[in-house]
Image (cartoon, rainbow, N blue to C red; front, side, top):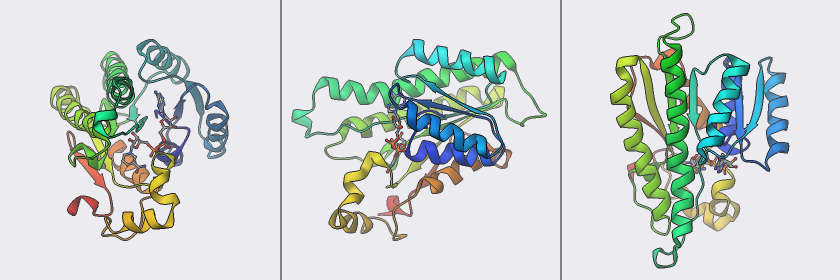
Length: 250
Ligand code: NAD
């Protein structure tokens, strides 16, 4: 689980442990306290967990993380590519660094982690006693994979890239029984979009965009991850599960 020290990643890590998984809490260097706290909570659910600091946009750190996961847990069955950032600006003011940073974390990071996971899935091969699939990848995308987002062009472009990366991998890897899917959360209450729900007026404006009448919670997204991670979705690959309270219907 990448970017697991907060928000959606944290919620998904808890849900996966409760479902019986052993979970690796990937986090950014500097988030050790939050990650350690989460590992304690995960272990209290009775399953093994450990944390690993790695910037997903750095190939050497991703390789080191997967090596450690395989050393401690033997192999990897599920990758949740969750880490993501926003860094918006009026387009004329957006710096190349801002553009690159969002692309590096949101898109390069998903590529680097997916490649490491696929290499391990193919090396290990099928394990029918564990799952019908040889491996599963769940990419955290966004409703903005398809909906443009003024002032957040880098974010929307990165998530559009995630969608086609996911679909291309699903097509290429289905022959190996590797399933690749995405979740497109709508507005979900986490640190990434605090500005949108911290102010009562901003929250009112946001709620006008959500037919279901409430902002999403990490558990809503975690429920989708549980489905895509389990054999209940055994015949599902290359799809995006939209979890947005109907936001995309407008
Ligand atoms: P969040 O900020 O709480 O979580 C993102 C996590 O990623 C943080 O823990 C952060 O430290 C980590 N991270 C950032 N850069 C990293 C890097 N280089 N390497 C490793 N970890 C890194 O926000 P969130 O809402 O939980 O976001 C999780 C995912 O959900 C993101 O991909 C985001 O784009 C997506 N998403 C969120 C919403 C929403 O409304 N909250 C909507 C659509 C999609």
